[in-house]
Length: 293
Image (cartoon, rainbow, N blue to C red; front, side):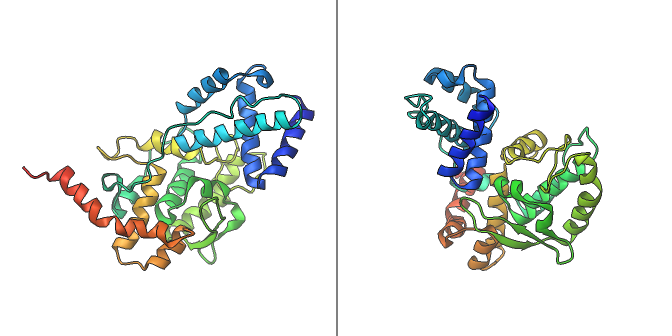
């Protein structure tokens, strides 16, 4: 795709989608184009082959998003007269994201805090960054998409707070940092982050070893790489960590509205399910670990 078409695509996406969605679809489309020869004339099978390769690397939610970006690209080709059909239009992924809260995949606060110590990294500065990343999952129960958006200026160390931007399903909010996080943030921002950036500049809080911003899709891969088999029989994911934090707050008597605001849920029902499911979850646990003989 030449630079002219490149800019046409960007303009098309910005016109038809929100600013953030346009940026994400553009990035996913460009990655697709780099991996598909003669992409303008690609057929259904070639696209499905690419989706198959993507499935092996990413969670289903990310694969769904990438597919939407590909569909948007071919919609652009049709819109701009480069192609008459959209070969991706009929593609539907049948995977369903598990929405049920499974007690066997939930963790106590003590178990979650043990995740702050992961495997050692090869590159200087990444150990501290990883602890900071995990602390945002464990103490603030953030979604990967929310973590990706955090900028240095969103962190107020004097007040001990962090501002979380709104997402597709969550509200913006300002959350308190734990006391132990404040020093962690200070050391990372003013020491290790500068070294990770090198000669590059960025406002994004979390930086990789090559100076690039950490993306939402990098977080599940990090968790899988560092924590697989940490707790036998239980899956550690960003989702199970978030669910655990919310469930623990309600279990400890935190008021529903306060937990809703903390989690960024737009509707009380999204928070309520963590409480309503407790009886059924307990029954599931009893059946799994203490079956009636």
